[in-house]
Length: 211
Image (tube, rainbow, N blue to C red; front, side):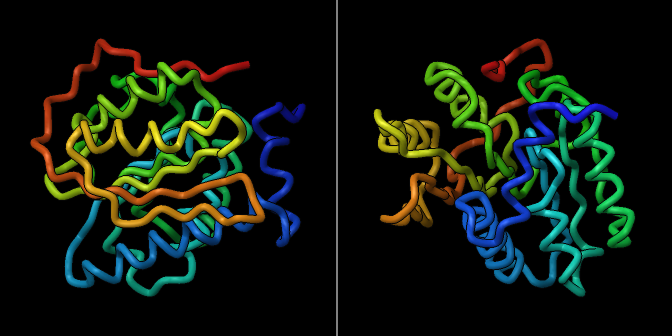
């Protein structure tokens, strides 16, 4: 199979010191902390543009309570889907489903939302600013009451992260964490939904990945 741009995007994970690997560890730390705060519950997770699933699969593979996590990873690229399926199978994560679909279309989330945790890692940096805002405004359709959203975004100039945090507040989210290392361009945000969930509009498209 010929490697695509989106498969090659994952190559820096092989370097533990790369910014992508550093970001991954921070995202996994926040997923782990979220799970630790809900130790006795079955929880649902949705990951948009999940790629090869390094964040969620890599973490769940290390946790004895992974069986209580029912997760759906939404990814469009065929090679990345295959890689995620192989990783999930190798880790014995039978409650994890990789759905090959366009995460920019809300119809792709039918049957798996509202979720308790929504992962938007690697999304906001690859879509237009207008689509970032549109996606944030649609998050109440993906989130259960009290859900958490973990997102990432580069802070390249002009830095959109102040606007992202403002848009999240306007959409009913409260910031639990925001990490922006001084020696790197990435950032990781954790926001808790305190608004009212909305029904899923399966006719809507919220973003299109930039070429």
